[in-house]
Amino acid sequence: MQFMIFFIGCNISFNTIKRPLFHDMLKKIGHFIPSYVLPSYESLRTKRIDKSKQRIEERVKPIMDSYTISRYTLVSDGWTDRQSRPLVNTLVFLR
Image (tube, rainbow, N blue to C red):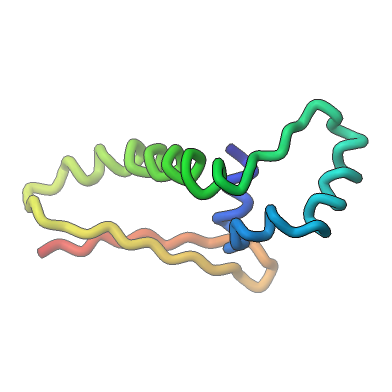
């Protein structure tokens, strides 16, 4: 899951996982964590993103359930601060 959070939080394209330089980097890291298995491109963009979305929806559900208005849109935006820390802003638009 941390791998997915890294890709999304740093706004890194899932296509990066297809690049030879990325694989070379992970081979070097693999010397320290030999049992680690890299998730596939397909897994990142399907199963893992769906699981991440589900986790976010579960965390937001109690807040959303507290609204009596039935038509709302959840919007989030992300960026980094001056120290390159990821920041995420989540807004609820009520209709």
